[in-house]
Length: 151
Image (cartoon, rainbow, N blue to C red; front, side, top):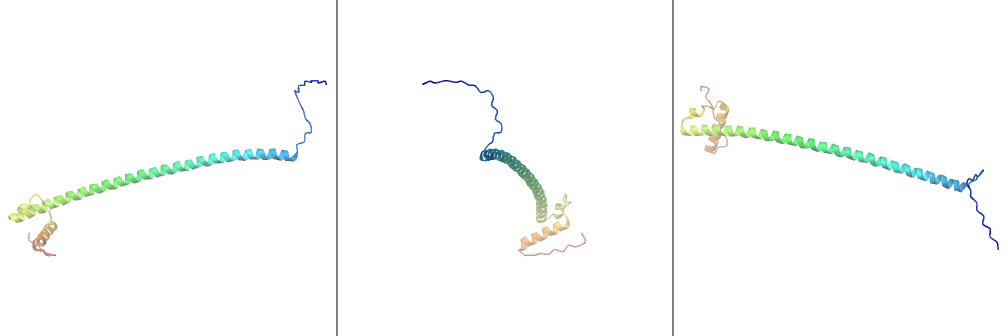
């Protein structure tokens, strides 16, 4: 037996009129189409993720802004209420001091001294004091006081 070894090196091969079976060509086209669809889906998912994150961040910023605005408004309302309450407390303390001074003066018999320095103590305030004092002293539900116009 004789074995002959031939060595050959192909450097260039040219095929003309090469015909690929239709099923093979369709398989290649389907593979390329599937790869393009996969790349398109990856891009669409990335775009949708970015758009969703943008909407989420926008909503978070709007919610934070609404929260800060609401807190500022609540603080403003609270401060205004505190200021009004302080003003009312001061007014009531002043009226209480005036009524007490008048009451003490009436009880001591020097009623005119009670009006010294009380320029804001008007006729309506005096009538309210007298009426409340009459009710307190008599236990009556209502007491009317008539004022003489010759004062």
